[in-house]
Length: 383
Image 1 (tube, one colour):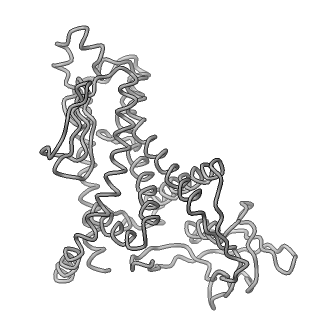
Image 2 (cartoon, rainbow, N blue to C red; image 1 turned 180 degrees about the vertical axis):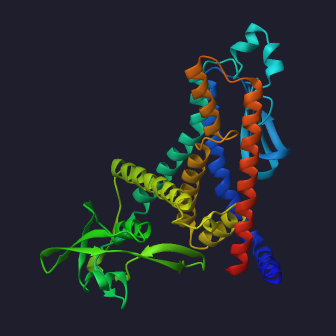
């Protein structure tokens, strides 16, 4: 096993340039817009912004704007931060001693001295910016390139599959699943992939007649085009590739934005369903990936073209926005949790309670990073 891992890491290192450039491109865009959300709302709320950094650690390059904010690129490109006046560090942990010694003029532009509502608005603006970025990317692709769809028509039915057991036949057109309208094969896949072991009521059109079938997708491990393994629910049917079943639709601006929002919500819904499945024991936690996996996937997707890379950027933007909303101290959601408690109590938590909370949050974040990196290494060894 050790030799397999070392060999896989060596192969990964051989592809490092091909992975690292797309990885930095994707991550920089996502991080920049996340921090830009914090920055713009902070400025709007009259909070002084000391630093806007892409990356952590020593500064590589930077400049000061006319408001005194230091914009910089730092040596470790795995994230970024915005530091406000009154913060003790890049995680927006308040410096209570410095805050107590501030003058009235300084308090007016200090993050820690602002009421709960402006602070909460600044914090939530980062994840919201990620969701907006994803919608814009998806909408741009749909408007400029178009959205290719394949009708949900069955071409073949695999023997001993869930579809055969349910009575599917070649030529069936899936029109609804559990009452939800199906307009493409992808719509069907999205529902089926997260429904392993669940009985679905599937309405099909067969020879002009609507027939309802009951099917229970089976959990299968499948490889994607890049050799990555995924455990998904499957029916055991293939799509029809007849000319009349394939179309590319370019959308108008409003339609593209609506479709972009729907695509963004699908990523949110699928992510939450997966996390819920992990806690319920229906999903395996080894699908959680870290920087190594993201770098690998970025390089693989980049080989498929710029549009595919932008699609990955949108998906990653949604994922990072959603992750930051989890109520874990140090993350945006943890700050929002503290502000919610403060709003209910009428006063903030004690310095000691906040310190303990941030330490717990740091431990959780570090453990998640270690776990994700461990998964990445095992994934390299088995791919």
